[in-house]
Length: 86
Image (cartoon, rainbow, N blue to C red; front, side, top):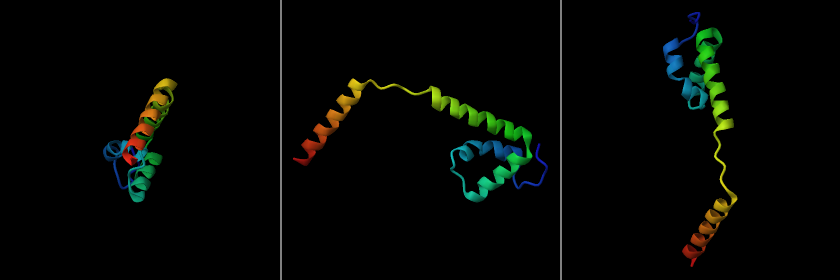
């Protein structure tokens, strides 16, 4: 696991992995986790897997919205905007 130089351990690193990937940590905490990931191959492997999984999901899990539906929604929004400004 880590070399012991990092301020946080593997359990905390893995617990905070999602908030790290989402960029929702303080800069200090991000740096602590980054140092741990740099030192600990097991945690880095978990990070690498989760990062790759997020990329794959983002690429593959996109819903296609038909143009007709987009147009109907836009029309409904414009109608609502016009009726509320009258």
